[in-house]
Length: 100
Image (tube, rainbow, N blue to C red):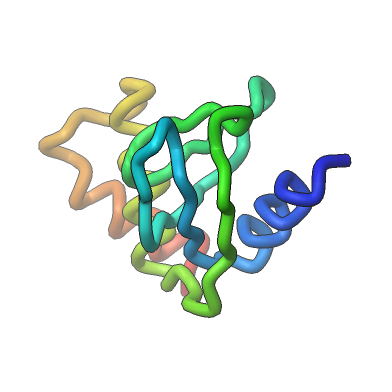
């Protein structure tokens, strides 16, 4: 297993922010929601193909529960599971269900 992939998996598990370079652009303080089955990194800043990520750094800072609820809401909006106008209510539901 690629060492950067293992670091990324551990960052997701521990809810750490990460930094990396992607297509010659530096991304800082990225909150990662998950790595999907196609090795795409789902984050609040977009979707990134893992193969194109370099210089991965796992930061000490942790993603708060509210930030994680926000990230899940953004993903649900992009999938079409919820409408944008109900996103605030969706965040409240996530806080009640998963983040008490």
